[in-house]
Image 1 (cartoon, rainbow, N blue to C red):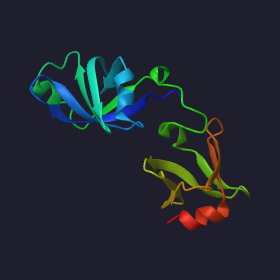
Image 2 (image 1 turned 180 degrees about the vertical axis):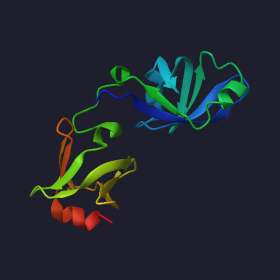
Image 3 (image 1 turned 135 degrees about the vertical axis):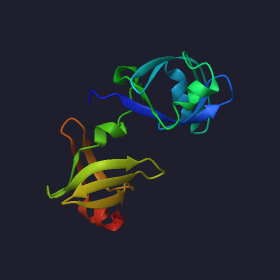
Image 4 (image 1 turned 90 degrees about the vertical axis):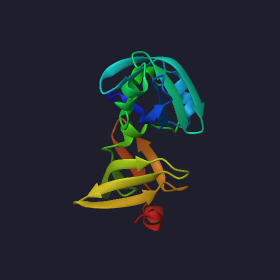
Length: 165
């Protein structure tokens, strides 16, 4: 749980003064306005300004002074140190903390390991078991318990079968 957190992806340069347009991977692009420092490809960039609209934010970063410099960041992940991340309310988790968790039903049967979580109105979890991918929607009543420290997610077996592909 010490890994840095990916909070956005650089989409493209915005204008000619080095501003970058990013897609937020947080609940809201407004969250990005709170960060004073970001990392892209391991390089630290102090945030000079940030504005947000929906899930898009526009960032001005120290050291990125023109469109050409901003273009080099296209497609790169925007990362923060975990200690700079806001505390989450109870029952909310960072996706990176769910990756690698074992998913079991209430009887303890292994259903797969979480390889990705796609944020949506109802998050979509992708599991890997015996080389096969299984996806399921985290609809009401499917996930009964998440133990991040124990790297285990327990699901209601019946509901899991109803929503999995």
